[in-house]
Image (cartoon, rainbow, N blue to C red; front, side, top):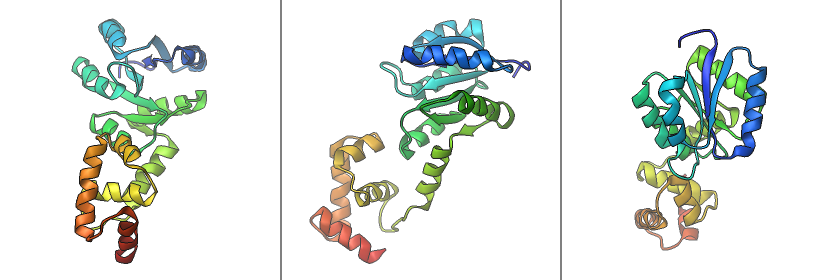
Length: 207
C-alpha cells in the first residue's frame, strides 16, 4: 500500500446506498473514495487510472457477481485488498468468497463505524470479518460430523436437522435441488431408512 491515505473504490449495484458511502468517506481522514460503481465491469474500466488500495464490493449483482470479480481485479493487481459485502451470511458463500481470495466479508447493513473498523482491520491486519460472520464460521466447525458420511453429506445433514427444505439447502450450497436429492438418497441408503423423519430419528440414535 502506497501512502498513508488509501484509495478506495466501492461497487454496489443499489444506487440508494451510494449517497451513504459518500457521506461515510467524507468523515474518514485515512481513506479516499475514488469511485462508486454499480458493477464489476464498470469498475474494471477505470481500474488502471484509479489504482485502488482497497475494493469494497457487493457479492450479489446482476451480471458478474462480486466473488467472480475478485479474480478479475487480482489480474490487475495481485496485492489489492478486497472486502465483500452481502446481506447473506451462510457459511457456503463465506467460504466461496475466501476461497476466491477475498480479504474480508461484512454483512449488510454496513454502517459508517463498521466500515471504518473494517478498513482499519484490512490496513493493519490484512483481513476483516464482521462478528456474525465469525460466529457462523465458528458454528460451522463446531457442528456435529458423522464419520460414515462425506463432507457434503454432513453439510446436508446439518441443514436437514435444522428443518431446511431441499430448495433452501440447494440455495445455501449453490447446487441444484436434484443434486441435494441425490445426496439425500445416499444418506438414506447409509442409514437404511426411507424418509426424512426416519433419518432424523436414526441420526439422533447414533449421535
